[in-house]
Image 1 (cartoon, rainbow, N blue to C red):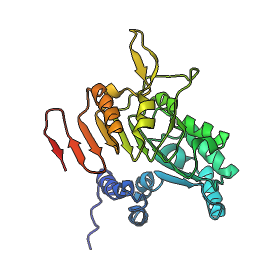
Image 2: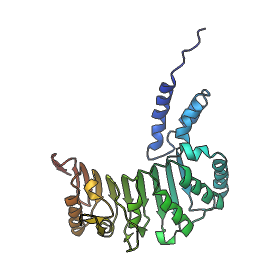
Image 3: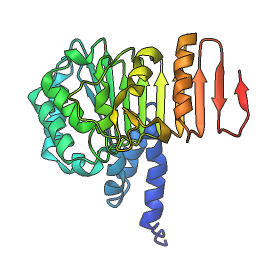
Image 4: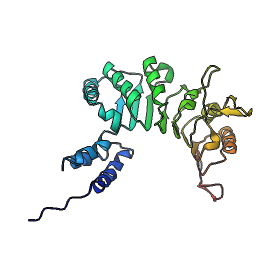
Length: 285
């Protein structure tokens, strides 16, 4: 019997990337069983699969019921630092009023903050505002969003988050706000920089209390122009949900400044508009 021909490593890597792409779908574990099976086929597949198997970590800090399991996971990851320093790309942080975090999890989050090449960070709150988050965790979160490798940041139902923090995200290009009814405006002593966000998604947010804060002046440039917390003139992709006429007027102010916009989606209670470029037709549904 002939020995089967060996596939080149780049072909094996391509196969794993296709399977791993399912892990980036809404269910981040969609491709995990297949990746585990692939990693068992031969020893060469193990390191190839690891970059997808360990690319996502979810900290569900809203219950103490699974705390022993979470501590066991933290001990494993702390004893294998290569996972967080080389493979971790996407971090999800779930917190609620029944907040519970162990010392091991704090240690793990600090290592992720110090050594990882994180590209995506999703902060999801369940009936908890930024003011109720412990100071130590606040410090870690603010450090994480300033990582130069972080390109995607999602805030979900985290009200009173300090809007000034967005301007410190030096690598951030995509910002998603979900269910945010109020952002904390900047203070006079906040350090401000010019972010390079090119994609902004606002879903089920209060346009009056979120966009207005993001558009608010935070100082002047060298030529005397007023700066805002987000450089709307860099936006290329934007999605908004509006529910009142006043919010529509607020959105118009954003569009006047978004001179580089290529794709726009506006959703409301009655209609949805897709605007693909300034030269294309506007379709109303």
